Image (tube, rainbow, N blue to C red; front, side, top):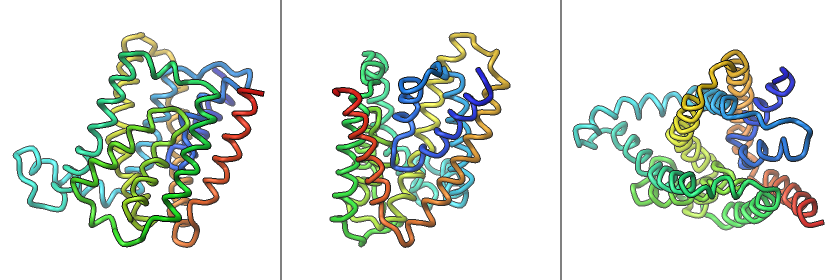
Length: 267
């Protein structure tokens, strides 16, 4: 695998993992729209690790609180902010793990990896994001996150297993629909990504180990490093822009890309 290919995959994954434009959709499109080979599971795992470290670093204050609450949660007590946050993240992760396992066992995850599917999901869920962002109120904040809303957002997040949907995009859509303020909707979505990325990375990692493909360690390290830098840049930029800009620019990008992909698929 060439250095250019590694960097391209890492930057695409890093830039699109936390923006509401679908990282998986872009990575599926890369070999479909170019002469490049599929990057393989090892590089996928590496880029996931890179983006995971980026979101943990950016939201370290929240992560530290949640980690501090895990011991209390393990003994059945939810009497601290940390234990409550850890519980909410665990609840929100359950649907995507269950649905993800079901799709993997049935093979539907591979069946949905097509330009047509990505085109439709880019377009439809882009418009849904616009609707939720424009119609949603700004009454709720991250501190108002409840167990009921954690479960609801977990169900929204599970929809992102359809390629092109965008995990961050669909979760932000759900949060805005519930009435969370834009930056807090994004904050909740990013925190929810941590256990989700860990779960998906673990599944991918098990596949890599079972295949015995350990020769790509150097390439994987480079991919992880560049994915980390790209993800941290994109995450920082988006969170700053949300102070004054809506999600409309991302919606426009999704709609244009979705229409282009549908034209390619059917035209």
